[in-house]
Image (cartoon, rainbow, N blue to C red; front, side):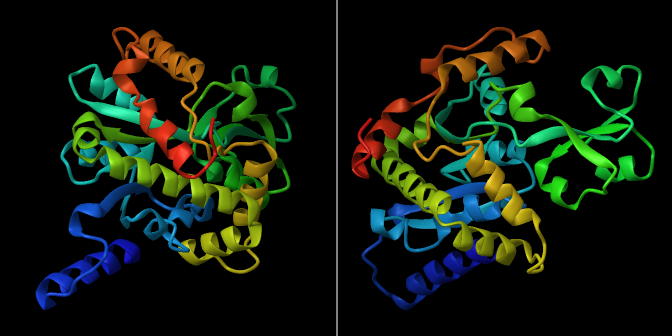
Length: 293
């Protein structure tokens, strides 16, 4: 990824040439993100406008195919934090890992059930074929409905409509949380606070500057100027308060997710919140940027 490569080259040049910087190597914060989509401007705003430098950090971004790979990289010490679904944290910590959720910003799921015009209600889905993340299967008549991201909605064929929004069907589902480890927090707690403050500031900016955020998304995803998806995803996120720059740790949602994993046989029993979250870093970050509580 260009951002990560650029920072890596800068660090290498500084070491080789004996250059000095006000930001020492120990203040480089390595953060993992999932592959960019139509919401990239919101996630990647943290890399712009010197948000990190203002907190005394040199931010290095790495991109991963999915959050399971990112979690493995975190546990292996390849990154200091990553953004992804919290379910992997529950599973890993139940097996002895020390992953900790620091805060969650995309607090609802952006997916939904999209269906053909023949499907008028959820009841009509009984006995029908439903795909997961396969919009083309509907247009080809392979299935009658599909669970897919809302970025598909503005470019969907006219005979496809949103049947149920994920935020309504599963309101307690947390899409994205920021995760680190107890080991990293013990040795770099101050930097973790600064990173969270950086994220908070960047998200605040993104949610109040549509033009800049949409433009960043199109730049990252190489979308054409007339591609409606970036603007649609942005408007939907703002309208439904999908993104919370305060990075909350909603206990009811975290507990609900654990309960679903227990029911599905993916988790033996729910873990204590104190064993999977580290709220003190978020609290300090809020004070650092003057947000209070």
